[in-house]
Image (cartoon, rainbow, N blue to C red; front, top):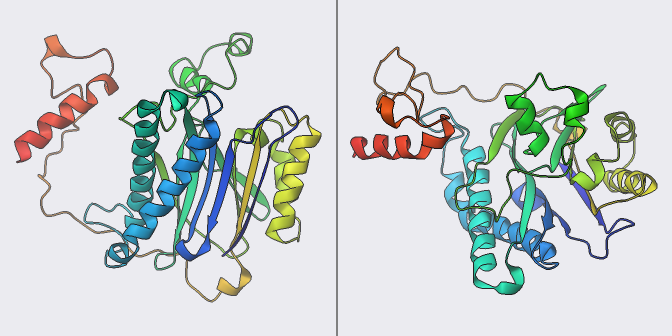
Length: 311
């Protein structure tokens, strides 16, 4: 795996609040886009990335003793990456609440963690920083923005374009530093030789279209040159925001390794009750008079009840 990262202030911002981290020794790659708190966005993004790196350093030895997949079929690497994001959220919240200067700060994050044993690249994201994959000849967006626009479309897909156009375009509905309860989106992908992954802030993706991203990622140039080209494109488009581009490449030298068939998931979990009914947390576990308006409103309460009964 080879990777390079470039960040830039852009042409309209006074400070650069984007941070990109390449830790090849940990197979960890992070982009964070900070905001808020009296110009403390750079503090939030820097703290979040440092916290995630520290978490990985502290769990390096214990992680290698784990199987590729836990007994529930979840990739251990994805759970580790999610744990790092949650730790970063706690650290950002703690500083934000203890310092008036940093109050209200937060950051988005998109991160990748490669596990060589399984040949999987695990991706975690919170907010509207993105991950793209270029697998010749196609480009795929592997993340979905946690934004107001996305949330509205999930609930009201029939809305006309004219109505959607009036919505604020850069409002995120999830970020580190917003709340103690954080939902981290996760996915795991089998890599292939010559894959290229782009981790970027919205300062790039909001002004550089997928066609241009595809064209640049397809260039036979080193990852550092590709990252610089992408940043230049964003600045050429006006550079309205800070810009971060981290390009990760799966080298041809890995062709001899069998990464396309990750280890088989566990066939069964002995402790599960064989019940054909579907349980919707926050709905079926509550008395009809106590049911919330949405399943997500009652999720934590229902989960807490399930945990109590299991003890």
